[in-house]
Length: 165
Image 1 (tube, one colour):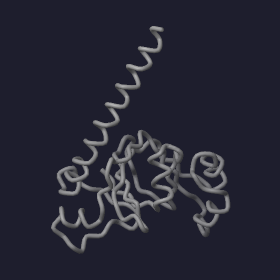
Image 2 (cartoon, rainbow, N blue to C red):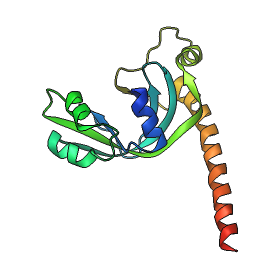
Image 3 (cartoon, one colour):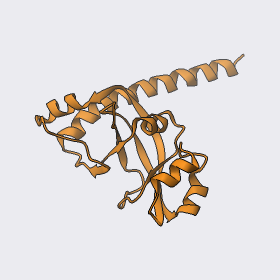
Image 4 (cartoon, rainbow, N blue to C red):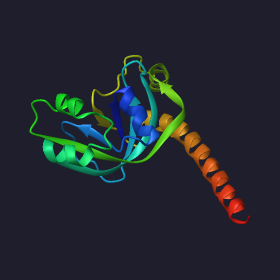
């Protein structure tokens, strides 16, 4: 499991499904399918959802822009500013985004961890499955998955009902 800090604007784009790639200046090995927990930094200061890591692309900035330009949620100017001084960049494909029903605010995280000074990573970190933060996140994620399953089931029933007409 990976905890990734993302600016709120981009975090919400990811979880709404409009941002298909998370851009980074560098990123270590991330196995396909890794569960990525989204911490919205800035004014939000909360874990708001998750996604599964897809393919990771590391390439020159020209090639990277060609790959992500329609699905990264940023303009070319923002892209150039972010990668200023870099020769290459990384795009992590976003799969199966899920927004939690309720955010897990920083205060709640600190309380659950019994650590009033706990801070989210500046960029990202890996969390063991048995870590208290992982258990806290699982509780919120389970509720979000249950709600998504209910919506999917309802939608499926409506499709079947409509096809019988």
